[in-house]
Image (tube, rainbow, N blue to C red; front, side):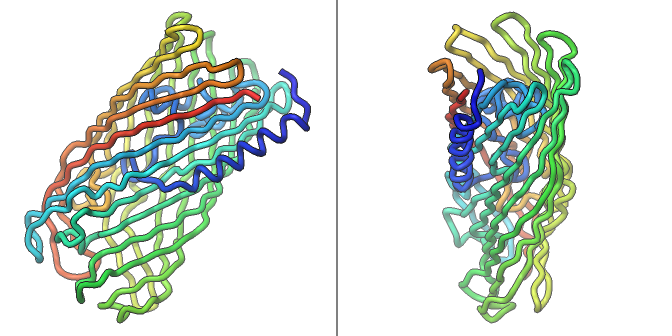
Length: 412
């Protein structure tokens, strides 16, 4: 389909504005660590199986080369409701035992994409996402673990302009720039009294993306994508009755985010059936601690996470020319494999994902998507030292997550 510059410019402009507005919604971690897998309703329905191998424009989050799979001007938006449950039972601490109640906060996250083919072999794209996020607060804010953490929030908004180039039939490469803004808030009970110690800060960081898509034969697509590591030096303020006398002092908190490599397969089995698979590595071993620097000294909460791994398989079935069904299952190896790294704000452990989804072709230009996932999180132990005051805090953590997502894909 041909588009004049005048006709193509307005829809793409509106798509980008909508993406920016959507990405500012609150976020909550729903993958290993505190990264957010829910970057496309289509791939939520397949448990992220096939995510870097194309099939929907949202694939460009994992692999910018996937931008080149669709001719003309296209856009995609996804909106996901995250319903987390997590409970931390402290069995031994300087303040006795106690239970947190649910520390999960219901939240939403979203992702939007736009891509335009500017020549036979070149595509330009833009993605607006929230790649990392966290929102937690215990129902029982007075339980012993509140000396380790009360309210914790992390919001990221990431703009990722990309370019993809088909260098030969069946071989496409892509690259992009990440421009990311982060805002964080961390609170914990102050050992000096009934008050709350708090840090809050914001920062910009920059990174890159790269990828390749191979089609060695008809019906087979292999995608390999890379998202670079980034470091946020969050500048803000810190106050504590014990350390600052309750006054705000300048502070910088350092947040080391991982690089991510994703390998995916999309294989046509029959004219109506496709097999999907993904393996993903996340360099969470960069996340050693949460250091906080102030004029009166430094604090740090140890984490010492390991690298995370994610494996999924799934499939798609065209029930009719208008309706496509999909499903997937995934196993995620958490970066937290020890009780000393299982923060009360992030009581993570190995996970199993069960996902289903569907797409309905509303018209020649509009497709509607829906997806649901339930995440089973393995129970784990807690054995932590606080940033301020005596310890340790010993206990157990349980968690599970439900995800509901809707989306729309448009060919302009």
